Image 1 (cartoon, helix red, strand yellow):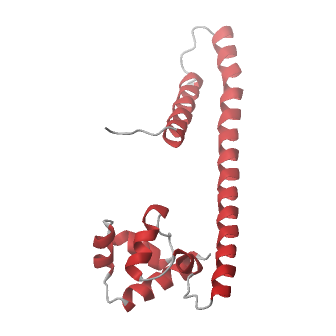
Image 2 (image 1 turned 90 degrees about the vertical axis):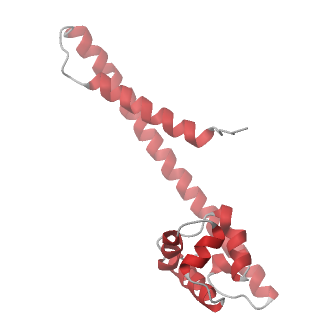
Image 3 (image 1 turned 180 degrees about the horizontal axis):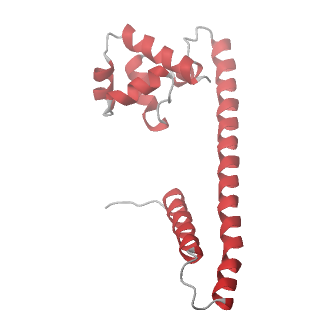
Length: 156
């Protein structure tokens, strides 16, 4: 699942349908810059619009993720399995990276807290270290990150 291959495939399918980047973007209610990023391999379409994109281009999601037309059922099944494995690997890698980042932030906050308390205990008149503000900032960043990641806001 190579982004550049997928991008070239999207571009060729779009051109086969006689659509410009702007027309495709309008049909998907997105910006033409997003379509351009797909076609240059800088990003891939979001999962939420993949089905609609495939319908417009006349391809399957499996073909989109493979970056090529699939002609036989045997090839289709093999490509589907490859795409699933690659998506699972990508997801596991992203989760591992996120876990590392969370661990680093937590360790920094844990190490700075005793330093802040010690400085305030031994130097009560000291106002210039900024460690307290740094700990507060780390806490706010972590809270905001977790809030937007794990909580859903639904409008009625």
